[in-house]
Image (cartoon, rainbow, N blue to C red; front, side):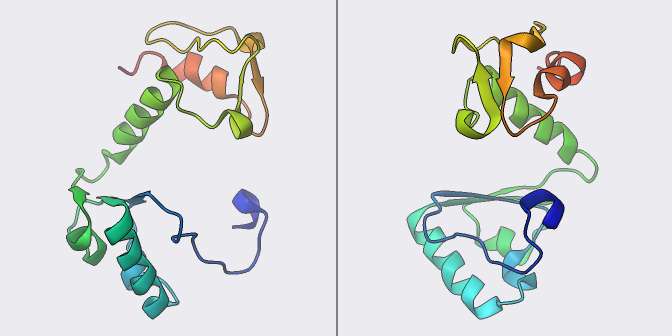
Amino acid sequence: RYYTEGYWGYHDFDLEKTKYLLIWGADPVASNRMVPNAIRRFGDVLENGTVAVVDPRLSTVGAKAHEWLPVRPGEDGALALALAHVILTEGLWNKTFVGDFADGANRFRAGQPVDESAFLEKHTHGLVKWWNLELKDRT
C-alpha cells in the first residue's frame, strides 16, 4: 500500500459515503480483517448505493451485490480497458487528480491520437502516451 497510497498501516474503506461500489476480484466481506464492521458497512452500501462485483466465481460478496459480472478468467483486462476507454472518451476522469487538456476540450476520441503536450498531467504519468500506444484503438 505504501507505493500506491503512501500509507504503511492498515486502514479501511470509506463506505459511509459510497454511492457506487465496484468490487473487482476480491471479497472484502469474507476476507477483511474487521469482518463484523465490514459486513455492517457493506449492508449500508447495499441499502444506500449500488454494488457491482467483477469476479468469475459467485463469491459471498457477489451473491449479495446488485450486479454480478462473471468475467471469464483472464478477460478482466479487456473489461478494464473498456472502462478506461469510456472514462476518457466521455470526459469522466477526475480532472483535479489526473489533469486536463490545457484548453479544457476533451480530445480523447476513438481511433484518434492525442498531442501529449496538450494535456497537463498532475498525479499521473504517461496517460496520453498510453492512450496513443494502447487505448485509442480499443473500441
